[in-house]
Image (cartoon, rainbow, N blue to C red; front, side):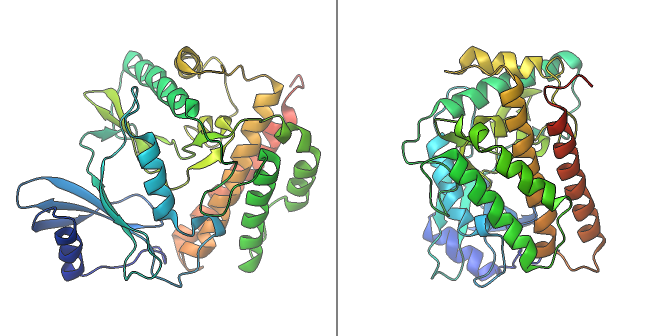
Amino acid sequence: MSKTKRNISDEALNEIFSKHSLGKIVKVIPLKGGQFNSVLKITVQSGKNYVIKIAPSKGTDVLTYEKDLIKSEVYFYEKFSGLKNIHFPEIYGYDYDRESEYQYLVMEFIEGKTLTDAKLSKEDYDQVMYGLGCAMAEIHNLSCEEGFGYIQNGLFASWEEAYLNMTENVIKNAERKNAEIPRIDEIRHILLENRDLLKSVKKPCPVHFDLWAGNIMLKDKKLYALIDCERAMFGDRIGDFISLDYLAPFDKEKNKKLTDGYNSVAKEPVVFDDNELKRFYLMRMYLGLIVFTEQHYRYSKFSPVFYAGRAFGKKVITNAISNYRKVGKDV
């Protein structure tokens, strides 16, 4: 089990549900998936289902951006509520006070299947991708005047400042655990040579930043909801295109339904020219740094999960750098 996940007693769960007048708990099932928070499916006497996320215990060693994630997730769920093209879980209660015994978020349990588990025809999959593009665009159309970055770490006036700060924080988090980041000298060189590219992102917008298939919910083989806003930030919208496949180069033809849906709703269309492609791989490189580094905070070095996660993080980083280097070249 991840070091950041904590147990909670039945008594404490009942106190939380009583506090928010949600009913008497009759069933508790741990949910699989995430590595950071403990996540439980709760059934109450009326038969209604909820999900509760419980943050790590106070004093748990976490990455810089992971501090106060419950507060951030509540913020973005509230910001995303009421969107036309996509549903997000309704919030029923939370407490992100650092002095509380438990930091938690109680929300709607989304019935249906994840895109990971669904068996779709090509036609159904194309429709889901088109709908996902529409949903992403609606999220990105939301305004943010405050700045760029993670709200829990403080916002910056420019994406250049935010991205460099976010990346440097993850590098420092890795160094604190004596984790040797692959191709670190090349990463630092890429950061230095891309200041103008980062400056080209002028407007901050909400970015979910974890739109992999396991966070995309379907009902009757149609897109219904997006879940798990833990990694959300204000930043470069291209960051929401990277997670459907962590490794493959961006293929315009393969992603045509996604981008067509996006451009049908977006205030500013995506074209995936050299500028956007380089930004795509910069965001994927950053995600790879997170995946690599978080293993050192989640698991013992004696755990097979640790080595598998580290190896995957390395692969994401090296593939992102290799594909970044190919942009604009005939290969």
